[in-house]
Amino acid sequence: MEIQNFIKIYERSFIENWDLPALSEYTTRETLTYGDLARDIAFIHMYYESLGLKPGDKVALCGRDSIRWVEVYMATVTYGAVIVPILSDFNPVDITHIVNHSEAQLFYVSESVWEHIEPEALLEVKAVNSLDRKCVLYDSRHEQLQSDIPNLRRRFNRRYKGGYTSLNVHYADCSNEELAEINYTSGTTGFSKGVMLTGENLAGNVCFGMEQVLHFRGSRALAFLPLAHAYGCAFDMLTPLAVGSHITLLCKTPSPRVLLKALAEVRPHLVICVPLILEKIYKNQILPLISKGSMRWTLAVPLLDTIIYSKIRKKLIDAFGGEFEEVIVGGAPLNHEVEEFLNKIKFPFTVGYGMTECGPLISYTPWREFQVGSSGRTLPTMESMVLSSDPENVPGEICVRGVNVMKGYYKNPEATELVLDKDGWLKTGDMGTRSADGTLFLRGRSKTMILTASGQNIYPEEIEAKLNNMPFVAESLVIEHDGRLMALVYPDYDATDRFGIALADLETTMETTRKDLNKLLAPYEQISRIKLMPNEFEKTPKRSIKRFLYTH
Image (cartoon, rainbow, N blue to C red; front, top):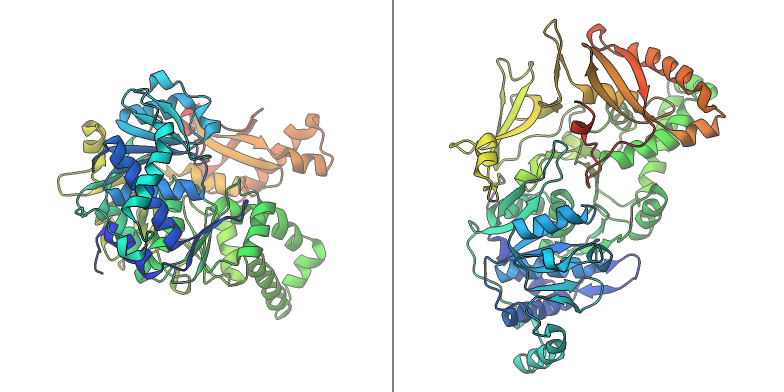
């Protein structure tokens, strides 16, 4: 597979797809063509020039997904500057630290985020621009940049007297080896690190997406994952914009009700999602249906079960818009019970594997070739190995190297040396096995693995997946306590209310749950007790539980 120049991919795409719709906002219904997008990018480039911004300088970007967010991202990388996307769910102290640590000279931010930031705390920033309105929120040098914007418009019109056309599109001539993005991870084990992604890393993901025809010219995409996260960025924005797709940005929290309505309207040709969405649909809509006494009996009858599963499959496909090739699940492991059911009804889904440090993709298999329980085959541009005496049967840490692997952590050589060796192998921190064809099977994180006194390896994530499917469990963590396993559970209070379970009876209910869970576990995995948590677990902006807060 040929890896193209990252910036030139978009120079060519914007020219070739000039009149096609590029971006829409689901909430406002605003739409831009590729020509409109290119024109707005050219204006931002002129603004960068007026500020004296140079290729390689950093531009921080923090806010909810929007057309403006995409414009700033694409304008920055095509200018040859380095984009620093920040999840808007980070707290203000972390956002300020990331802007300063990255040495960003320009900061684009949603005003709802900006109101909690102290301008004087931003050390290198020349100007802060609003993502909600085209205005300057803060000018560190008091040069009244806001009043200069009309001037900039006049200069833009003079530079492109006949109007900005596809003939004017020319972007920075940067090597793929140069830094394009610094993406700060939202880790579950403490402070975030700035992942340095080059043009080569990003192009590796995009070119693979193009070769696999995940998106195509004129296809429809619904972007509902945060674009500041590597997964959504690569496959809901960068890949579709490379081929002429029409992206609709959801621009709001993807609750199941909102999301299903949007999917029905947009009818995307590919659905990129995290496991939580499929798991919620399964737990709240499918599981109650197939668990009814009469339905359980019917599903035990040959042929009848096929008919019912076929109807459930059609209903689920229609719920996702009815016109997609496949649903790609990533960002976290998919619950095994949900995965087995989706496979049983022949739902077109596949599970990929990646991490921010690979921008993000490591492995993927199209759904027709997908092996249940796996996380797909290692990409042809990547290598993988498992540090184990028997990589096919005994789990070990998964290591990868190749085109997608990051340059390192920004201004953090110590952290880089811990995960990236001199031969380019990246330690993922994930435990798993690997088949001869490069297919990966994940078990859990190396940092969370529990080693028992008898020498058994326990992966708490596998137990949690089973526990989270139990009635009245919203979320859980399995930890070691006094040499035994204990489950911390935040109850599903909506379900307890629905079934009239009083708080006083919750302990008894959870004891039943514990016994039912232990029937599904090996003897060495048995849970000794369930401890009820009064509040939801604290989470990262990616919605992963901050395990380190509960395991010490």
